[in-house]
Amino acid sequence: MKPFVKWAGGKRQILSYITERIKAFRKEVKKDFTYYEPFVGGGAVFLGLKHNNVIINDKNSELINAYKVVRDYPNELMNAIDEYNALYTTQGVQVYYDIRSLDRNIEIYDKMSDIQKAARTIFLNKTCYNGLYRVNSKGEFNTPAGKYNNPSIYDKKNLLSISKYIKENVELYSTSYEHIIGNTGAGDIIYIDPPYDYEDENGFTNYQKEGFTFADFETLKRVCDQCIQRESYVIISNNATERVINLFKKDAHYQIIYELKHLNTKRSINSKGDKRNTGKEVIIMGSPVSFPQANSLNKIVKLLSVSDEKIYKNNERLLKLLDVTVPRQINYYLSSLKYLGLLNDKRELTENGRKILLTRNNLTKSKMIVNTILSFDIFKKIYNYESQNVPYTDLQLAHEIRKAIPGYSDATYMRRATTVKKWLYWCREINNSV
Image (cartoon, rainbow, N blue to C red; front, side, top):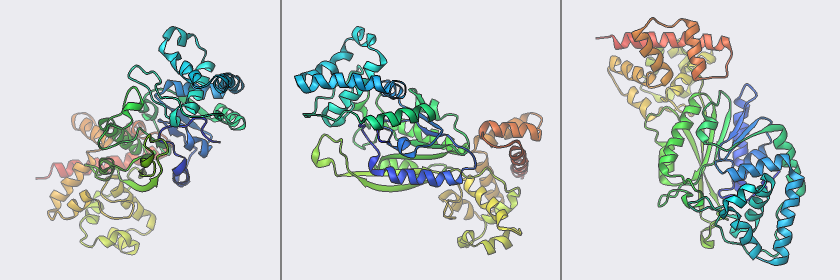
């Protein structure tokens, strides 16, 4: 299946890389996950992935209406498009502007059926200049006509395949991306393709009524951090501008570690032909690490006191240092360091981890670890509550962890509750130390 519209920032050129990463994430997932695309656009990724549990969203209600009509009325939609196209091919380009002007008259436009609106959206998309969807400040489509003699508006077989697939596997929404991905759970996979950033502009501000600024991008990053803290997987694509790269590469808290992959692409939708071969994109990937399973914080301190950082890649040395018997127990401690943002996926200390390592005073070192632990909402909330009230029971702790990180079994939450209790008891001991 291929997109039935052409959309700014289409992903066909990097589709194989993105789907391969999604498949790699899928191997790590222990349950049937939900796949999310909160900025779906043309939908090349979700159509290429063909997953059986998908949620797609776009703030562009005209686009989502087109998806719904493709799902529910594909044959009626094709008939309506054929009528537009017959007029266009026999009467010329003025037909394009007549169809485009329909949204200038609200009374007329509101009387159009969803099928007619979807046919208009797809027809204009395939006959406008360079396939660019752009609206003015009033939300009116204002892209000029392209130069086509006999445009191909749709592929019947493809459209019917998409209709069947969406009907059986996909939920459709037109709302904010925060609303769509605000409740993702452990193992869910999110692909995010927001408006692209340009360091001398504010993304595709001119292409959509609402616009999208870099401040919006910073908010998006914080939402993604929260998704990953709930153990969802995140993939983001955007322009490889310096500020986008720095935003994800130099996280101030080092709690979420993103992997960045740079790719060269062609900008076929750029209005300037000499700039269509200069695209430099970055794929940003964020993977969750397991909620801590290492019960001894003193061993965490010991790990962050070894002068030779090569030890993190040497399981034999780690077995002796931690005084454990099986490699699985090593992973408990390494994953805890990753969870705290002190170690990356390559078993290398982050900048924050190295600051703690280089701190010679053990009490100061321990307090730095305490501050890191309490920077996480789940630990901070429980710590502050128990400082003023009766401590939680294990069952209450499990309930709080479930609210923060949904998607696991009751037994798993009870085990994690034990870890949280031990960590917070240790934090109180350190904070009460003279």
